[in-house]
Image: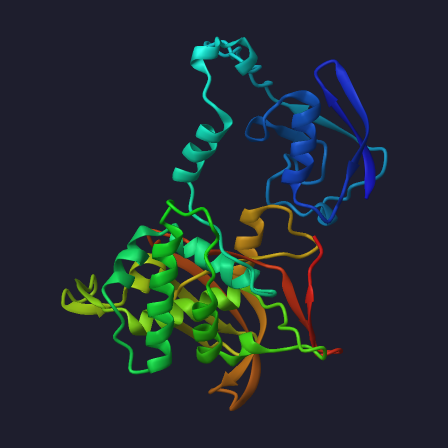
Length: 340
């Protein structure tokens, strides 16, 4: 962290904190607050290399404490007063008011019912509530299950029942997803893990989401659609149709000239969180580039280090976004939560 000065028009903003490990967008956001110049209108000069770019690395720009930078740009317009004046409840006549009970009833009609927490089951409840916001999933669930696994079919039936209960506003009692929880633990025993005192352990919502989507992809009826490459009709499960991100992946060996290209379908987009990530776009960009991947090299006939670059070729109707908040600590053999 260093302190710099910024000259803007006839003003000088002194001792502004600049974290050299942060993205330039963080610094520009600070200047937006001070100057009123929106980030997209800012031009910052005075650093090595000329104009500061959004993807620049401050560690390579020779930033020195006390140095003065210059900000160029036009401040944005101040917000305009609302055309319609705000009217408060206490200013309304009694005839225009509704009772608290009537307001409560109106609010309940517009909301889904809640889900009971059955003991550290917030991960499953969050997953179900997300799926409930996708109307196509409810439609597909109503069509029944067609998996070769009885336990997977039981999960689909239980999920369909819970979805219907969530959307029944007549009763304001929360829904108990006990049957769904039992079916989930039968499909994946990881969710039945208990601690030393016998209580069920907390689990990761992303793992629950991935498990449910995997089951639904196998159990729900697939539909036929045309393949863009060869024009023939292929069977596509509803999960990939709704959430499938089509990726083009390039694997390049760091120790040879091998390059492998392939296409994959991912059902979730990961935003990696590190000490240098402060914005969603930066986290997504880092998640699309992996280094230090160890795999077999045919030309070297041994394990080697690879780099993987992914790009999105087609977006689905719904994008499932996962903030990667856990990392594996090999020294302790545990998953640690990233506190950021």
